[in-house]
Length: 102
Ligand code: FES
Image (cartoon, rainbow, N blue to C red):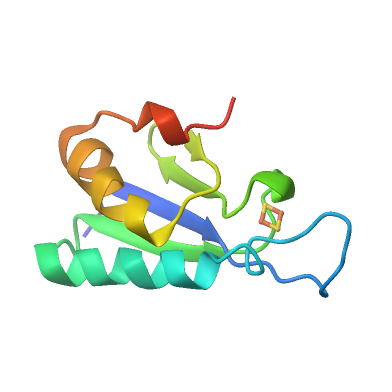
């Protein structure tokens, strides 16, 4: 089955103190868990697909999340933002502007 939306979450880890930082050290693991928790709660498997990735570029603004087919980039995403991303973007197609990367 083809999902309606595909969420990519950067799970890259760099050593502590690395000048670029990394999404893992900024809390990406908790964000991935929150996505899976919402998928479970909302029965969204099949409609939404979530994939962990390596570095996607904007490391200093991590955790980085990208949603397709719109190609919307989110930065500094926290586990507590995930419910809003589901409510607004993944279910209604309206990206969450306050989390969008410029
Ligand atoms: S480490 Fe996540 S975007 Fe680079």
